[in-house]
Image (tube, rainbow, N blue to C red):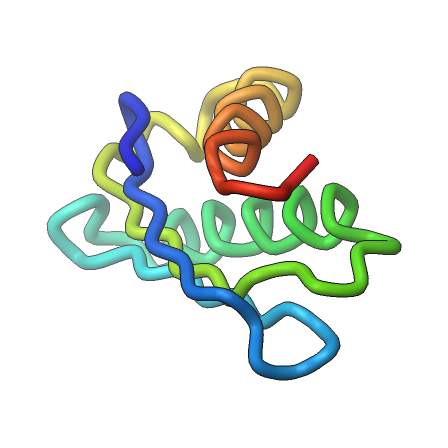
Length: 91
């Protein structure tokens, strides 16, 4: 699934809890500080969105645009939640 800034890959969970990975390449931004900021934001939004779900899927976010580092939290959260809603039996 795609959005303007993020590509989301998912698989049904084999375990009881979800697993998430965030891939931010150097092509997105040269600075490790910025890449880690994007990574931390996506992990936190995902953690809050999937809290209480018993069969949440395994997720891989592939970031395609550095604008996620400077966007407001509400905008990033809306983008991630829109992607998660496209997964069958989610949210």
